[in-house]
Image (tube, rainbow, N blue to C red; front, side, top):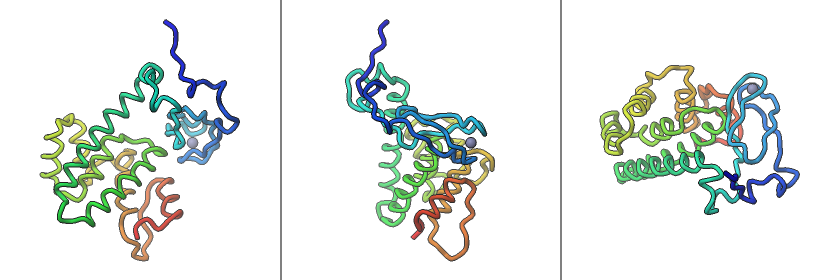
Length: 207
Ligand SMILES: [Zn+2]
């Protein structure tokens, strides 16, 4: 079968800066990325991390996109649906507390940056960040209403109750997101990941 190739995915149409180097978020080594690489494994420390500049070219819109990058398109669609539906439910629960929702929304953006660099399970992390202002019983109820897989629900609850494994990337990302959301009190934030420390230095996100 002939492989369908979108013009945006064809290296012959690429510009010189479509290949670039990125710093491994774990060890700092320089790793070469092609612009359509979704993720690469660091040759030095073995850490698998996402390309923060991922650009799918025409895969975002072209009618053949599902044939070019089927897993990625399907993954993105499923993820967007779950995240958006859960966000809608949480926003309704927090309707009389706009500040709580604003913080939650900010947390989603921070978690996104951390997930791209540090790995982790996006579904688990996004759900935990969305649900962190609710109590655990409410969180379970909302996840159940979306027919979330039981193992995902348990992983989310482990994050929310602080019983997750300290070396699990999803656990680390969730903890760092909450730390970054805390208002600056003068005391140093307890950050685990390199990326979170970089974000904390880049801007005072908690203010
Ligand atoms: Zn590395």
